[in-house]
Image (cartoon, rainbow, N blue to C red; front, side, top):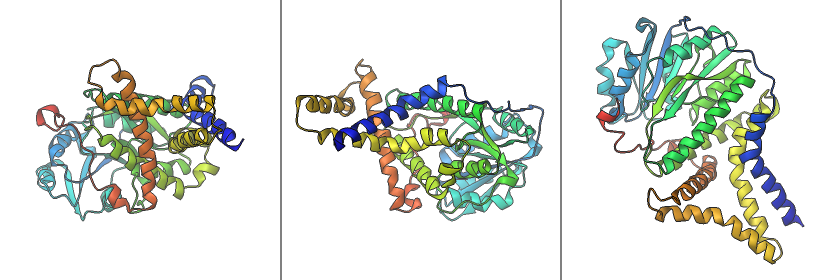
Length: 387
């Protein structure tokens, strides 16, 4: 009886996280927040903060993108924080010194420490956080800043669009990311996001404060502080950056690191569970992501604990169908029709294994989780493909 109850509850919870909440978000009529009073003529001084570790392959092109932004150049300062880089990152940044680009060298210590070192030097009314790899649309900064004409807006996340990869894992992640962007648009309409996209977000300078040095997700911690000060965090889909396809398997590392950062935030911010005005959405959307793999484990174990009978064995076979598809994906050639089933199954399981792997944040230092940058495809790293 206990196994049956666990099976029913775990199945219901998994169904809710995967399908129920998205359906409710789409179909229910939610109280709408006031329309953002975005003013494209609004201007403010801006400091761009970009923490870089061994980013020489992308830094020159990224600085060229930033210097070509459709925004008054005299209002923008750029700080490149070299986090103990050992390649040509520092030399490349110094080449742009005459263009209001400041290089700040800090000992290797992770992104949070790097950003903390730069905050006292940031004089702009708006802080624009970005990463070294992603090309920036020329109008990105103009759109981000325009939202701060509305005094209720404390932080703005742009939209990261994935450049087309070879299919497989990258195509599956693109599908997942499109759902994520859709959910963020809905949350913006209702009230506020809980976090931002790390490579493209901005916030009011007076709301920024130093991060705990071991922070893994600045794009969650900083916006979350904004949220609890009564401001809104919104998505502006017109503020766009682009990201390259990752190497096969690299997404697992990135997802593990991201979700480990989310665990950090949950432990350090219990108010998200108790007095958040977006609590239901937070629990369903963000926390549910970490709960999902445990529901799947509970389903498998409770089914195995049922009395040995034909229907129990049938359930077990059905439940093993998804892992079997995922394992089969390695042997299915690209372009085969079966790949449309095996590749999403493999990516789904990898993302859930990443959520389990993120539990390492309780046992290892943050530095180990930040130890290696995300690997992109070899083609993306070529200069001719970065323009």
